[in-house]
Length: 68
Image (tube, rainbow, N blue to C red; front, side):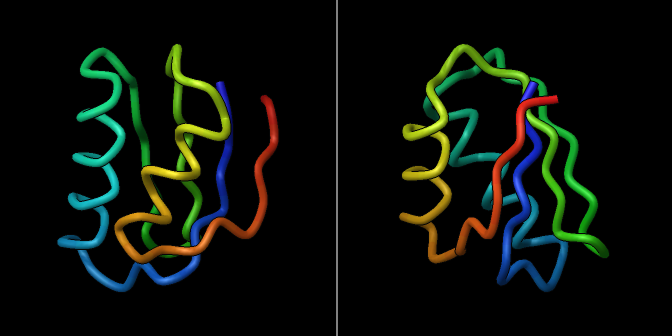
């Protein structure tokens, strides 16, 4: 599981957009996003680079990534 700090999410629509971007790549991904903290916990078979790219392509910034 990876924990990503995502900058730029301001509403539930942003959360939905990030989830859809990840699920488009990996339909079986498990995703939890805390809008207040901007933290996304993602369990996915996709690489860190692919996850980051999908999120960045939607206009959000990845501040940090940790494996948890």
